[in-house]
Amino acid sequence: MSSQLRLACILALLSVTLSCGGSDDLGVNNVSPSGSVGGIVVDAATREPMADVKITIVAGGKQYPAEAPAATDATGRFGVQGVPAGDLIVRFEGPATHAKLELSATLQNAAGDFPLANATLSLGPIGMVQTTADTNAFKVRLVQPDGQPASGLKTQLRSGPSWIDFSNTTGTARGNIVVSATSSAIGEVAFKGIPDFALLGGLIGVGGVSDTVRLVVPPQDINNDGRIDFVGTQVDLSVNKLVGSIPTVVVGSATAPALEILATTIPALAGKAGNRAVAAVGGPLFVVFNWPIIKDQTQALLYDELGQPATAPTLNVDGTTMQMSFTNLKPGAEYNLNLRAVAEADGQVIEKIFGAPFFTPPMSGSKPTVTLTRDPNNPRIIRVLFNEPLGIGVAGNLGGGNALLYFDYDIDGSGAKGDSPAEIGASSSNVTLVSDEQDPPGAAGVSGIATRWHFTIPQDNQSNDLPVGTTVNFSFSRMGTPMIRGTGELAEDLTSTIPN
Image 1 (cartoon, one colour):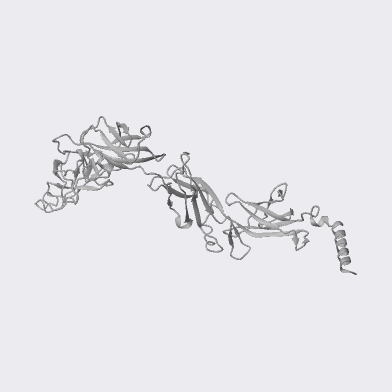
Image 2 (cartoon, rainbow, N blue to C red):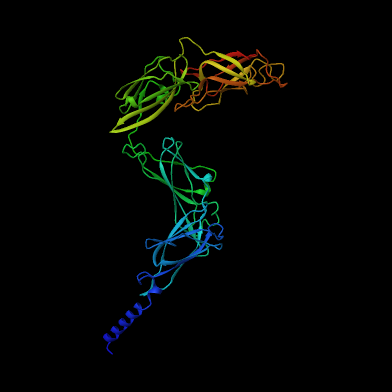
């Protein structure tokens, strides 16, 4: 028999075989053979079987089982019959404590050139990952380069694994979990539903399992003006190393012209120390910027030393120069200015917050005076009120001791004065004056110069408070940094007596 004839006979025989009864074994119309998909589901941390996990398979554009999801039994096993062979997606949904997952797989429909009947696909064991409770959300704080909170930023946290493949001995990390959140008014972002890396501790470092997450802040336009405000950033964080703490991530602002002060008659606004008194009580005061100011969008607020609102200044703008006119300012007083300046630069609208304290000059010829009263809640504490702000002029000195106090009293009972600390004539004192300055609202900050202070009455060698009427000397010049007035002048020593 010739080779051509032999081939024709084989093809004819094959045609008869495929057309006679083969369709029941190979699926529908012999086009797509069907088979079964099964496997085992366990908890990723404990490897204990998980019952009642819902299983859904998507193949050929349809869902299997068609009527309802399959479920794992008490041993964690599941099986789904009649699944068309080919590429498919398997979805797992366990209890709310575990991450949902889906994986891609292939149910083989042929072995070489020959179709398969009743193909099988075995998965797993599949380790489902337990996620953190909402009350234990992973938090990150976003700040701008100037330290202000970066609020309203859309962020993503990408973490893995979404499941563990235990088909080998040790387990291998598979998949990722992506959680989205928006930063709050204080720049805080809370990500819920990420893997509980504390429970996965025994697996970390094996098979690609890691507690490292990636924070992604994409570039975005916050104020919807068509320009990018933040250029975006990404950073990798190790969750287990951050237990009990909230990491801070600096989000880079988009490149834009900077608004700066070139000159001003407010010394502290120009960053000057020492004399921070303005030239006159009534002003006006001037600020010169590097870009033209938009008057209608610029705002100035004023607070007194106690943080109470004072009459806001009237603003007049001429290009880059702004004039501030004040009313009802008192001589020899401290005020705190918060200035939100808005300018137009290279076709962009930019803004910046400026803040600084300033002092009005005292009345001509006036000198600092002091008044002492007892604290009604603690008679050992003496409240000190100066008629004008005094201090060392260091911002951030809130609560620090600024002056040494000496008393006209034989504190140690030696029969002489000047041989014990805090006695008049002694070389040192262990009693200090403490500032009660309040941190005012806004960006001005504490000035280190204030009218309100306090000290605690010392006791003699018999543990008795020094008596009413004892002379108190305020030594402003014996500290390493002498006390000054708001004008920058050295404050002269003062004398008073312990009050009733």
